[in-house]
Amino acid sequence: MAAALSHTLQQLAERVGAEVEGDGALVVRGLAHPATAGTDDLALVLDATGVAALATSAARAAAVPRGLRAKLSAGGVAAWLLLDRPRLAMAGLAEAFEQPPALAPGVHPSAVLGEGVVLGEGVRIGPLAVIGDGTQIGAETLVAGQVTIGADVTVGSGCRFAAGVRIGDRVRIGDRVILQPNCVIGSDGFSYVTEEVSTVERARESNALEHSETSGNNEGIRRIASLGTVVLEDDVEIGACTTVDRGTLAETRIGRNTKIDNLVQVAHNVRIGENCMVAGHCGLSGSVVIGDRSVLGGGVGVADHKTIGSDVVVLAASGVGTDIPNGMMYSGTPALPRAEYIQELLFLRRGQRLQGDIRGLKQKLAELEAKPTPDESPGD
Image (cartoon, rainbow, N blue to C red):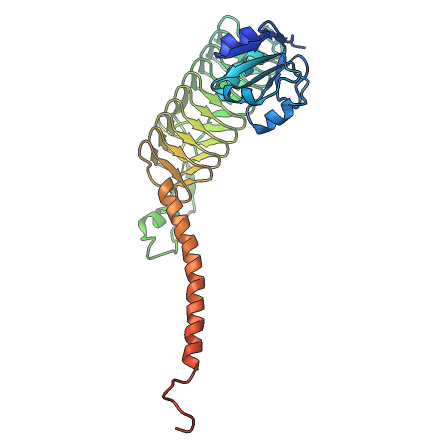
């Protein structure tokens, strides 16, 4: 069992740039929501639910946004951390209480290491892990149980690979990379060709505005081998069950400090820049390029060979079928600039109201046409 971590409030304040109100020497041993916090926990208040729960919390210490402190009664709280950027502070506080992976020093006896494997100082290899020939792993990297790393892979220092991670041959991984359970780095790309002109090729050639039919022959589908690799730069994090396919001839590359959520598909030849965030269930088709500092919300799909610029935000469940320039916010399917998308939604709603108005006018017109005109008299 891992030893409990403990910090004084003053130590935590210095760590996250907060101000202490009350007893800075008070020791806390965990970080928790006010509703579940015990007497030794630091209760973290970020929103209205936390404020309500703090009134009955057992916690003796609380971390709160500075602007909320005046609205809170002390109750049983003996000391406070006043936060200027609460979520940023949360990152530092959570890091302070994060338990290291339970992995014994050295190489587990059941692990299998190929010929010419080089392990840096402090590397830990868990049970049933497999490391291929010629692979190099940097200092202080942790490889959990049942991880498979292929041949001729280069791994930097301070990485953490959770259980079930799969890394293909010749993949290059930088320093401090975190791979969550069962993610796959370096699988083959989805790349095929038909012996005759396929339905997809025919569809691309046709005028979609004039024709909806397809033609072509999908017999004889042949695999195109993936000869490239994957490069994960420093401080990249990849979520559970995410797949990053290797390039067809060159590389698939994930830039420095980019974070990718669970269940994301990154296809062959994709290039993602630095400091990007890609939320769960996104699908990036082959040869997509994303600039730096861009964010994709959950469930975004991007068509092949599209370019998304830097500082872009694509809102959840959008379908990107065109290039997106730098600094834009897009949403919808097909994805449009946010303001344009909202205008289209409003137009559709106005159109529905107009349809009702038109039906009413048609009814009135029919009633008027059914009535005899004033100059018409019976018997004429």
